[in-house]
Image 1 (tube, rainbow, N blue to C red):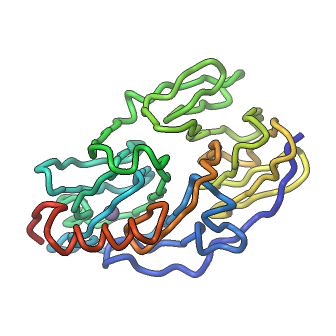
Image 2 (image 1 turned 90 degrees about the vertical axis):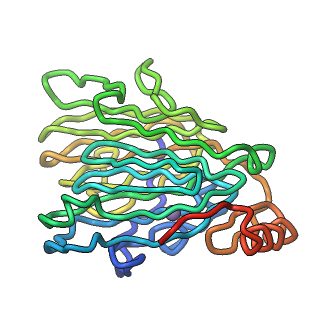
Length: 290
Ligand code: MN
């Protein structure tokens, strides 16, 4: 049985721009640093929060990324994004945006216009998944994944289902392409439903409880908005929903490469960070209006 290493309560929230009220679990949470969570180098969680109506969409203005992927998982509300290659899109409840920043993009992330006008509950996860050194300077790309396209594993006795975003579960392959082995899934469990997961022991593995409350391994309770970190001692663990629950399940093979991080740039060496800053200042990430 894979043991629980610790259960982390949500850190004090802060605002990213004026649209994302987030608890930073990685790398800010107790012991959840980039090396321990490799390749998950950042996890911001906007726990359910009501935004009142606004004529001007709230969000984060133009900023760069290089060297990793940003994965946005929407639970409540809608997010729109625009980038320097002319791309853009909207993701809503249950959708996922998997952006490979790689060699570099400029983008902005805002509440979708109609959602802003009406206001409402907003709940979202943004994860940064590090890229292997050999892919850090590859071409940027997007995978805009609508909920309907995410493969689902039904649980017995109408116990709910698992949405396989990436990796594999119960013989079902996830929809997102990844550059290293990354399992990412949402477990939507009815009250009382119990399910098992199995990932290689050396994969760094954790859970974020989005809704409800779960019992892990029949031993410990984890409430909504808490992060469960597992040890790397074994493969299997179980979760059982004490009430109707939603759980984000993460497990990935560590890259075990040097990490040089500076704000929105995550590379392998300090020299590559200076290069990223220089390229950004010289406009090599493209152009995007605020
Ligand atoms: Mn961004």
